[in-house]
Figure (cartoon, rainbow over the protein chains, first blue to last red):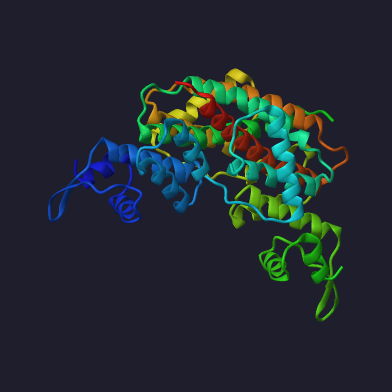
Length: 206
Length: 206
C-alpha cells in the first residue's frame, strides 16, 4: 500500500508516519519510483507497536527506539529476547546515594528469598528500590517486606499471561508481545487499582 | 530553616526549590526580611510529594500542579478528597472514535458487573478503555473480560492499602497518602511483573 493508505489504515497522519521513518522507528518501504514506496502488514504492525509504547506506555521516543532495536538485532537467543525487550523499557538507573544503595540491597534480598531468576542488572530492581526509597521518605523505616504482597500478585498474573503467549512468534513478534503486554497490563492494573480505591473511599463510613 | 537547609534536608538544589516556588508547586516560606524566608516541615513534606509525582510517577509538571491544587482547595468532603486526588492524576480523556466509544462501554459494563461505586467520568475508565483498544489492535476481538483478572487483584491490594491508611490525616495528608501510594505501588506492581516475566522466560524450556 502507499503511505496514504498506511495512514488511513493506521489512523495516523502521513506527517506522523514520515516522522517515524525519519526517526528510524519505522523501516523504509519498498521504493518503486523516485517518489513512491510500498508498505505492508509489517509496517502496520510496527506503527501499532510504536503507538502502544508512546501512548499507553507514555515512553519517551528514545526508549521506543531502544525496544525496536531489540527487534532488529541479529538473531538473538529466544529466551534472551524477552529479557532484552523488558530491559530496553527502562527505567534508567537511579542515584548512587546511600539510601538507594540500601534499598537495592533490600530488593535483591527479597528476590533471593523468592528464588526468582533475574539479572542483577535488571532495571526493574532499580525501579523497586526507587519506589522503596520514596515510600520510606513518607513512612520512615518502612520494611522492604511491604513490597512482597505485590510480588505474589504480579507473579500470578505473569504466569497467566505467559501461558497465553501465542505459539510460533518470531523475534519481532516476541518483542512486540512482551512490550505490548507490559505497557497494556501495567496500565490496566494501575487503572483498576485507582478505581478500587475510589470504590473503597465511596463506601467508607468512618 | 533557610532555603539552603531545606535544600540539604530534601537532597534537592536551591535552584530546583526556587523553580518549584515559581511554579506554584511549593508554598512560599515565611518572609523574615527582604532576602530571607523561613521554611518548615510542611515544605519538606511537599518537596517529597513533588519528587514522588515527578520521579516515580513520571508525571508532567501540570499534573503535579493539579494534584497539589486538590490539597489546597477549601475544605472538601473527606470522601471526595481521594476521588479528586486520583482524578487529578489523569490521564486526559482519549479519542472519541468508534473503537474507543465501544471500549468505554465495555469497561462500564465490567464495572456494573463488579458493582464498584465509581464516577462515570473517572479517568481510569478511559485508561482501561484505551488499553483495551491497544490490546484489540494486536489481538483483534480480544474480549473485555480479559481485563477482569486484573480487577480482582487490584481490589485485593487496594483493600490492604486502605486498611493501612494512617488515622487522623488532614486534607493535605489524605491527598499525599492517596497519590504517593498510587505512584509508588503502581510502579512496584509494574516492576515485579517485569521481573516475574524475566524469571518465567529464564525457566522456559520450550
